Length: 440
Ligand code: ATP
Ligand code: MG
Image 1 (cartoon, protein in one colour):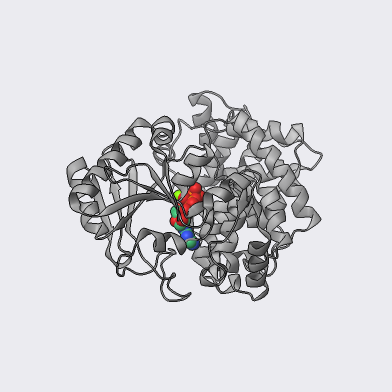
Image 2: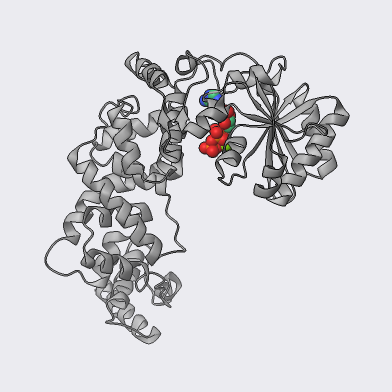
């Protein structure tokens, strides 16, 4: 095993002091407790690449849960333990989180074995760290740093991950990696895209074999969803989707997903639309992966989109937004592009209830100055319009309750948006006229 290089100085220089101190303290505790603790995975990789990470994953040779308990105790941190997987979170008072797991050998529970979204095998005997690292996905993720006092900072690199990091290559740790866990085909694209690394020839061949054998098709939907959303959260989703398409990785997500010319144009427009939005509404942060997901599914029929969301187990909040956009995008676009200008109230009624991601898609489809102006007006000038008038006022005018209340309040709101009424008094007068009309 390549070993010995000490990263202590690098850690001190690159990690926030708080993280460094807590890692050092964890190492002292490990030494006192007679276990060995290591920081593993993304943090080590990112440290060596010079990227900032704050996700701390700790692997413990020995009873990791007992270690997590003691660490939480002495740091005044909260603790959440998942016995079944022998993993735990330690959450510090400032909300920083350490993930702690006992080292383990063996591969992830086979597909469909109730493996809840994790690649972690069910809890078993803790094993030497070297074995734990060798069952990970890619060599650049199979690095660890010893934390124990006395060995703090020592790098462990059993699969020559450092060499791959330097060569900017992505290599599977072992040959049946994609068979053991097909989510790794998506993870491969995530790291390839994020770091601009090249997937090694052999690894790429294994990946393609796994795809040809339809292994990604068998993944449980929620795991595909996690991977897809993480992929779409990376910069340049248009390129990511092109890459997925080239490797036949869209099909396992849904057979109807295809990189059509329309989708290519839409994705290019989406990047610009998101950029416009960020500058125009810096405080309104859209769900960017969801916006890309909407673009991806824009060419699908409503039933296909519903089936896909069901398979992926998209959270209800996101699914709701997608459904709204699927239902309304096309007709909204058509009305926006009519020659006759829309009044403020018409714009308001047309766009009301569309999620921000849907508005962004409208710009992505047709990035004209006119559409941007309309959306801006809708989101700024037409937004916080509140009436002085209320249902109570209508009741005091003797109006019997019913759907007519909403109809009248809407009419008054429209008038206010269009500037035909401005004062409270005018609101009341208009309402009064409308109530009278109903009464006759
Ligand atoms: P990111 O920076 O996107 O969080 P990461 O490498 O930290 O990337 P995580 O999903 O946070 O990835 O997982 C942490 C570590 O756990 C990885 O570095 C890798 O060693 C291991 N790991 C995670 N998922 C898998 C998997 N499906 N198969 C094998 N190893 C995995
Ligand atoms: Mg991570």
